[in-house]
Amino acid sequence: MKDRPPHGVCLPVSYVSSRDGDTILVSLGSDGGGLVWPIRLDSIDCPEKRDPGGFEAHDYVIALLTDADLSVWVASPKRKNILRSLSFDRIIGDLFIEGKGWLTDILVEAGHATRV
Image 1 (tube, rainbow, N blue to C red):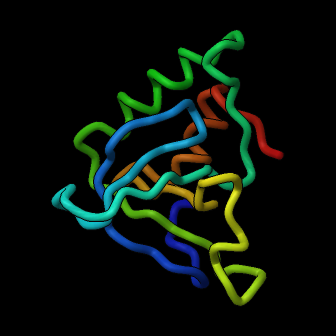
Image 2: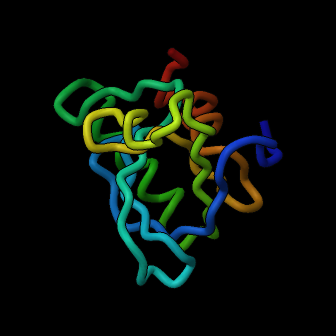
Image 3: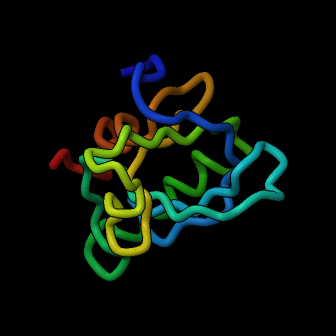
């Protein structure tokens, strides 16, 4: 999927850091000075850093997102309160990399993640 989805919230963000391949910290706003959100990438699974391929996925994400033009997409929550849709302390969503596409698609195509 290369286009932004029709439902949900899509906001400009800046890359802050990565916990692993499928949990990314972003700052709201393109200047990096906003509230930091931990994003759990929707519908994929990357290996943990302690598992085979984990550091490679983590490093791949860092290379893709550093200095990239990003938007975060958060799906319309199934419940009225978006905080009830959290995965641990993380917001479920995806990152759109301008000129490249969705991070989840890129990770799966590169072999660093599987669809779940």
